[in-house]
Image (tube, rainbow, N blue to C red; front, side):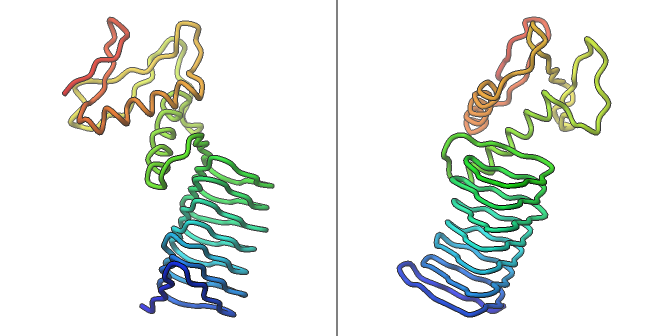
Amino acid sequence: MKKIYIPAGETVTYNSLHTGRVVVYGTLHVCGRLTAKEIIGGGNVEAGEIICDDMRVSSATADYVTAKRIVADKLFVRYECRASGQIAVRDYLTAGYVCTGTLSVSLSDVGSCDADKVIMVRQRVSLLGLLWASWWRGLFLGLFHGDKSEKPASEGADTQVPMREDMAATPLPVRMNAKGETPDDDTIGLMIAVLSDLKERGYRVSKIDTAGESKVEA
């Protein structure tokens, strides 16, 4: 597989580029189409059109982007940005049109969006933290709001959380509050932060029916 490497502090320009892997820590400028299997690094990529499987860079600017997965600090797309899997942008996303499976973003200016799931991440985190927070947020939204494809639960019935086989003995019921309201975004964000911290410390969280309070098991 042909590899292009651009070190920090350097700017490399091509009229068009077709390669296997691009590692960029400086600036890559392609006047026309950039086609690669993978584009990674902490640098900047500028092109008329970007086509790749996986792109993980600090900043990318293009008229059109087509990929399977995109992870970036900043993403500027003049017309269309398409990713069959996921688009995760930590700082800022601007595009005329976005089409993807899951869109995770903090600040954005998008003309039109066609996504199966949109996750708003408010705080500034690392790219790995962004993907982790997106996963937790998607999990909680699924628990409290349910999947659209599922039939609505009967009134007063508990919503059971899917559990792994090794946790089947301790089911985790999820309920609304006393007023029948679901948690707001701030509450969900707080729960994500708490559970993330507990997971790092090696704890497992479950909820008991009698007292209605969470308990932590080692």
